Image (cartoon, rainbow, N blue to C red; front, side, top):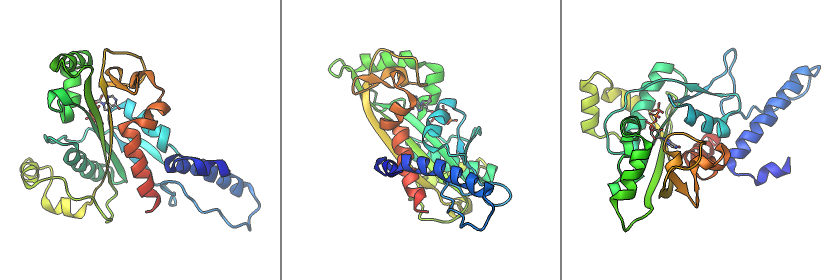
Length: 263
Ligand code: ITT
């Protein structure tokens, strides 16, 4: 088992989880009297219902990648379409979504909000990436980016992912990214009030990867992956594990798992 120690912390967690599950099975089969191994799953089960981390998204591609890192039997998708507030940054959208998802699920939740930020288009589509994918489409966004700045070909861009964790308990939360104007608007719409934000701390984890916008290549991944090239390979040309090793989501998941391991 020594070789697991050379892996990044997130893979170590995953490996440990597998080992613990195997040990627990053996312990159940034994005739008793032995000390039980410490349960080191991300969410050790409580009797009778195991606590689950609900990965909140309607996007099956995100879930595939999150499972590649976190699937130790304590992670499942919550297909919940939380209200996406209008904001120029991902953080307030994810934080607000995590509070709403926690209220809905009553279980620990991890909301994943992501976007493609293209330098030559002043960070468009950014937080509006989902809407723009559904309207303009990925290929047109790619053409716009490539035409936007002839001096900057292929166009530079970044993928960003913000994960927002909420479990109803208090912890050293991230500074609240929702400004008073956003909160007033949400409260006016009946979605959130100040007391809710104060009593539901949210922890944020960000991952960023830079790359180039190119002609579409590859048939893996999802969303904007075919037009996003990182070090010569588009995300759609990578396996989920290869993409996770360098991607915005993989980096955010790594930060989350490292923090969670100390909780
Ligand atoms: P949820 O909000 O339910 O999670 P969504 O697909 O709408 O699903 P976002 O609001 O985060 O998710 O949308 C971000 C957009 O960027 C959307 O069009 C995604 O397809 C795309 N996207 C997010 N992560 C991506 C990735 O790793 N690779 C390619 N495209 C991605």
